[in-house]
Length: 268
Image 1 (spheres, rainbow, N blue to C red):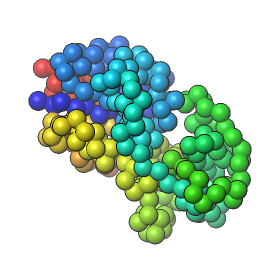
Image 2: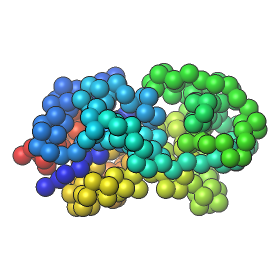
Image 3: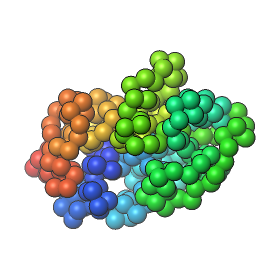
């Protein structure tokens, strides 16, 4: 019996129009009626998840959310932060230097200033739009070394980003959780800020065993939680590397693959 279901949003729960299907809503509601804890686990900030949480009626003291790739785990009803794993202004400047050397656009999430970038770009605007955020233009050199940063991201088209992904120095990989959350996003997070550690921490908080956890995802930033899961469900629209981690491959995000997995393994 699965007692905790962690679901990615973009490419998984949401279709390509960024909509939650009625079938997905119904399956999640039925799972919750059976006493299953269902959580959204996303690279998005909480502000970019609020509307989806509202649609799914995840707003009680029994509801939780994993945002910023689990850099923050929060109780939605009480607002209590269960877990928080940040980096610093010094880290943001280090990643920015790496991006500048490769002529790549970048931005970061500051706990004080929100979405910050030294220059606006297409994918920073994309981030702002899908999460209903304001962009603050800021030279990263002005950040104090201890400035609280949630994560720093390289943001450019895949033809620019892919060679950079292939050549990230081992020193950066050692010091950060480096994940591809979309073809145009490469994220540098606290080493403990990944969905696997996040789901594990929430399961422990709730007294749920690993084999009672089901995770559903489609992309690189879902790999850690898929590896942790008692049941790893991967979307049909995922890349081959992500599919290789699957215990089960469900339908696509445009065909309510999330609902079909819940119906098969929880509601049946």
